[in-house]
Image 1 (cartoon, rainbow, N blue to C red):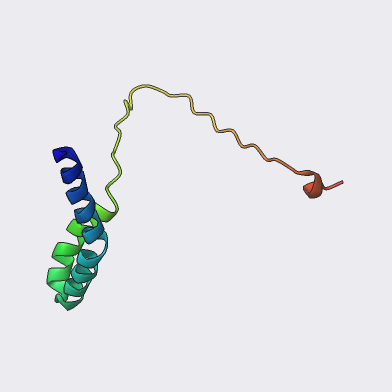
Image 2 (cartoon, rainbow, N blue to C red):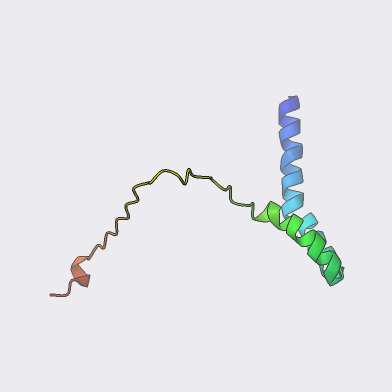
Length: 80
């Protein structure tokens, strides 16, 4: 029974963050002076659009790279 209550509370929080709290947060952002906005906005942005993970490659090894381009022509698209 406790797991259902916890899940229910998480669902309420998710709904609030996506709804009422996001509206309120946007209103707060609108009131910030530019210098404060530029401090806080990048931090928030990372929650909305997470950074891509960088993958390092071994630059000492040569790698074969093959790019295949497939163009499909349908019956209505043929040039005959």
